[in-house]
Length: 166
Image (cartoon, rainbow, N blue to C red; front, top):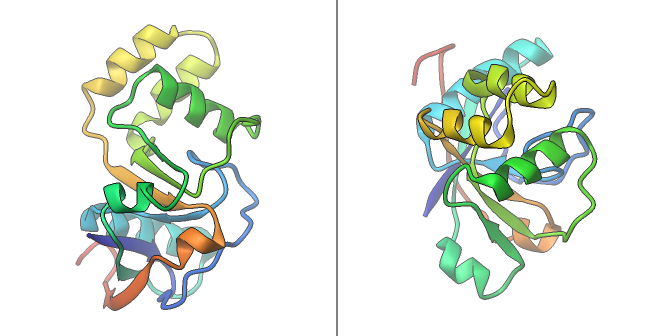
C-alpha cells in the first residue's frame, strides 16, 4: 500500500514529533492514501509554518490486515459513534483509553470543522453530527503512533509541488 505525508519539507526518515496542538487520532506520524489530501495538507503546513515549500513524501507500507497481525491497530471504517468519541476526546486532549500502534480511518478535515464545533457546543446531538458527517466526502488518515509501527514505513520518493498544484 502507498501512503503520503504532506509537509513543508521532504520527510525521508519519519519520526514521532510532539505537537503543540491536538489532532484527530492523537500523537503520531500522519499519512493518507489520498494524494490530493496530502497536497492540500502540504499547502496548509507551509502556510502555517511560513517556511519551506509544499512537499509530499511517499512510503510503502504493508496492508492494514498484515499490520493488524503484528501491532495494536484501530480501524474506523466510517464516521460512527465510536469514531466521533475517539476524535472528540483526542481533539480535546482528553483521550485516556487504550493505546494503539496504528490508527486508520476517516479524517475530520476542515470541511467538517463547523459540524464538530456545533457538536462540541451542544448544538448538534451525536446522532445529528454523525448523520451530517456521513454525507460528506471524508478522506482517510493512517497514523503511526509508536516507533515500532513507524519502522513499517519504507520511504519511496518525494513529490515536490507548487502551491495548490501536484
